[in-house]
Structures are given as structure tokens and as C-alpha cells.
Length: 281
Image 1: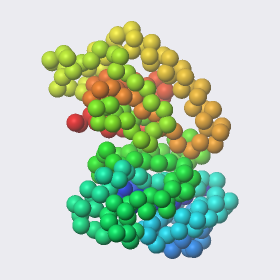
Image 2 (image 1 turned 60 degrees about the vertical axis):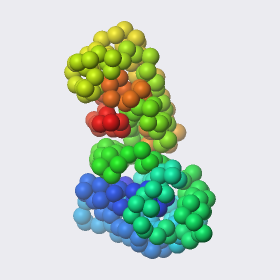
Image 3 (image 1 turned 90 degrees about the vertical axis):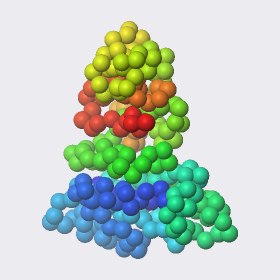
């Protein structure tokens, strides 16, 4: 049976980008369908003759949507489908303000100022965010990175019933990811940034990866972390968690965290690629 996803979140946080990415993955995507029709359309789409990778409903603007209605629909979907989930898109207030000022769109939540509108929408949507199975913070990533994050999370059409695990590398210089569950710090490892010939390269290059991983502290770190995750991930799945995001950080997010995250993916035998948030900075 296809996965059914309710996609909602803060206005300006990237719903249209997620919609396009899911559509490219072969999902049946419906934008701004009245909530009272979602359950019925979900039945028709998931039970039809055509096979979709999943069914996604892009839930409308918060100014005209009551969170109680969204949660009622989510509960009814879960009663009918084992694989019904909520994806909530978020971003810091200052980022949302810049996005609205940049495109000159009117915020759907009416208030005296743009900041007040965003604050009012955030208060209204708090219960939905709390109930979400997966929260993605789009504040520190661009449109192309968000599309890659969606592809890496939802591309595995054979794992609809299992826990989805995402690996993310990042740089502490650019802020801790707000949408991850577990964070591992590898700033204690020798930094290739101080090696002149390695500085322009990244952890995706063999020379950098070899430099980082050939040190015994890196091998001990990987053994310990992988051992922890090998028993912890199944326990998360037993508790019914649908998505697990694991982040690995270094100073700039270009060298150590990238190499370590790629090696973690290999040792944990993940099919999906790692999302390298800051590798291009």
C-alpha cells in the first residue's frame, strides 16, 4: 500500500518545493484539496489500479486552516492506513521574514506586521508541528538542497513500512541543524583544512577521506558510533518512530564530517546518500 503524507508547515518554508520533488519521485501529489475530501481521495488514490510511490496532500495556508481539522484528518487517515504520516516544514522567523520581503508575497495569516503574522501562524500550527512524524528545517538550506533532502528521505519505495534513517553532515560554524534527532561531533579529529593541498577538496575526495579516517581516533569513533546505532535504530523502530535523522558535525562541514558521515553510511549499509548540508560553502 502507498504511503500517505500530509505536507504542511510554516508559510514560506518550502511546500511548493516539496510538492515538486515528490511529484518527480512518482508520488500522486494534490495541492490545497479541502480537508474534508482528503480521506476519501486518499482511499481512491491508494486503492486505485495505478501504482504510485506515495500519495501526498499539500495542506493549505495556515490562515484558512484550523490545526484541529488537520489533526482530525490525520487521525482518520491513520485508522484507515498504516502508513499515514505528517511532514512539517519549518524555518526560523528571520528567514521567513527575508523570504516574504524578497518575493513581496502577502502572508496568509493577517496581523499588524509581517513578524506578527509569522508569530501568529507559528502559535496556530504548534499542535500540528508537535504531532508531526518528520520536521524539516529549511532555514539553512536552499531550494535545490531541500529537493535533495526530500529525494534522499522518500526515494526508497520498498521501505514504506520501516524506519527511515537520514544521515546529515554539517558545519557548526553555520549552526546546529534544528531538525535532527541525534548529533555526533567529530571536531576532535585532525582538520584537513590546515593541510594546504587538502583545503580546497572535500570529504568526498579520497585524499581528504583517507587523511581523516586513517587516524586511530577516527576508527575508534566510528566503531563506537556504529555499534551504538546498530542496536539503537531497531529500538527506535520498535517504538514506532517513522523517521530518524542522524547528524555529524565538524567546524565548517566540508572535510571531517563529510568523510565520517560517508563512512558511517557504508558501515551501516544504508542505500540512501548522505545529505551534506555545508559541503559547498
